[in-house]
Image (cartoon, rainbow, N blue to C red; front, side, top):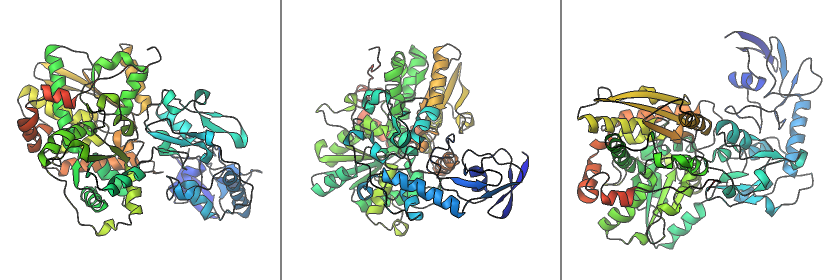
Length: 576
């Protein structure tokens, strides 16, 4: 790649050609402020906070859409530039409510940081608060468009990354807002609750459906045995909330923090991920032997399940009936574990720490409730919410000694931890399905073909006389692309892993905010490192999994496992 020279604030730099001024400046360590810009989204120059002076141009330019050229002279901090940024911020603030103290994004709000950094005082008259701009119809996501700064990030994330097109910009100027079609509530749209819109929102206009106050009430009531489970991806992503480098494995520190927060038992969703592999892998082998709908699709991602039910209901029979690891853990805790400790299920309050906003909705799906109508999982917190709870509790996490998960639902394998990354469910399933089908040890443990950030990946695996064709897709746009290709008969597979979020769970809508363009790869490296550090790396070799089948479930796909660990789906499409 060719390089060019440019001068920024009087200093000469050499940068690759073809970059925008924003990208070039970030590459050399100069941060230009912005609200609409994000390195993982296409730039639009909407907010103009990134205004700069460029020699030869009469007007200020937007750094996020202005391409660099050889010899370009750029000024990022002149009085003209600073005054323009301040005016834009003041105008946005005049249309923004004073709710920082109770906002879910307080402390992690890009707009709040800029207002403080530039010393913006509230001199312009405030726009009135409109209750009609609040949408709490979704079980996963809350929108308060009074807080919207019209940056358009949610639109681009939903359309470009997810190919859902739920939002579009309505009205003009100061009144512009990202609305759904006919301004419906999210629950009345095709929204799959993936939460990517909340992940990219720079303010508190779109957040996960908040759950921290309900957690506090449950803990303070003294009525419950408080149990928590943590998803595979959280042990890496929580590090960012604790101020550690992306990709750092913080399992022991996270468990210790959860104990300090007041939980009586801390379990690992990796355990139930191993359980999922036993059920899902056995289901796949049964379909191969006895016949069934192919390809068989994985069913761990609730946003993907929503997409099938809402737009592709003809593929519901192709979905594995196995519940997700979150819901399997719920069923095990409220039956097997409740019996072990002699406590009624309604006296156990089970909390999930998940990287996903759609998990909040999944826990309340009618098909996933107990016979009493109560949920198996009582409350779902995102990784972001756990980080917020830790900060509010003033825990000095750096001084906590690492703690281990509780037995028997804390033992897991490396196969389970890679559930957190795209391709991980597929690889974990193949590690077990291969050995169950052939009775032979795997010739190689890692399936490199299904790893990495490529949008669609495929591989073949020889199971004695059967060649298994598998594929993996992540990110809504890639999922839709692969599903359309399958539907058109362009490709054929036996087994397909679908994850709605880019990168899989490590890029989930409930993960920490980040403007690092390489954040997915960094988290992914941490996940695979955690797998490598595990002494047991195949789900069927987990001693605790063997024990729970001997003591409770008998065998995979038994009557009891079907009753507790499997589910069904509902056609929610317009054609129904």
